[in-house]
Length: 164
Image (cartoon, rainbow, N blue to C red):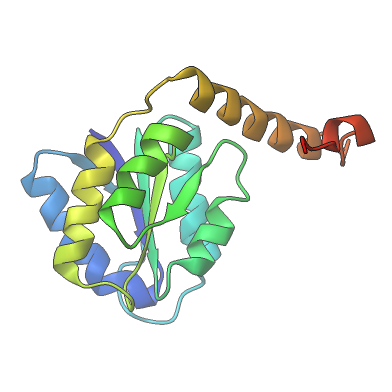
């Protein structure tokens, strides 16, 4: 599988480990930075990975920062990216199976190397289920993204009504 990989300085060591791990599994990995542990801004690397996925230069993406929160927020600003900060294997596969997550986010200061490897492998082995309920929900997410990109903002009051 083609994978785009990036991190800020806090995620550098884990990124280096995962780069070697992914290559040992036979994946083609694009290392989009950082290339050392000097301070770096996480949005730059979240964007680089997100664009690689959206532009189909990679099938999936992986971004790492200290907590995973910053790169998750940044990656999810890119239309077409569905990034999830995962710290357990259930979320890593369920995010793909139910939500078509295409970027895995990891917090290098929150999880260890071996859990990170397990999360990555779980994420890469998962496939979107395509079940009707998941397709319907994904369509709503994509519609939300499109509506706000087009500057149309909030839906009508009728659309916001909830079932009792």
